[in-house]
Image: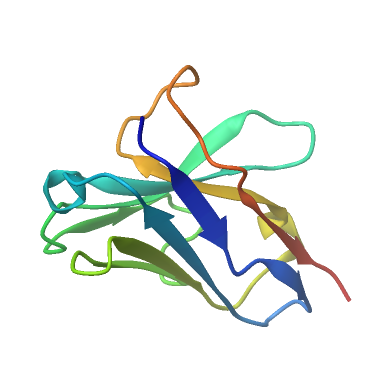
Length: 117
């Protein structure tokens, strides 16, 4: 199974920025479209952003569009999420996984992002 390890979360004030990182163990990483997801307190996990395998195309959930940027480095098997202009409602545990990952797929431990003054 693919091992996913997310990092970079923390406590940040509203309006601040964080950069999340995710490393994947799969030898097929460069051929896999990847996504970031988040699970807010009391809610189900939701999709946040996706990037195609070669990095040419990105998609974002409406509430993060123009604030978050997804990117990847296939040589390092890494995917990133640059989060700017953070809001309290962005508080969540953030996960990376393949695009369209299901609940019964393998997931990492996630990284906690808390936006609070």
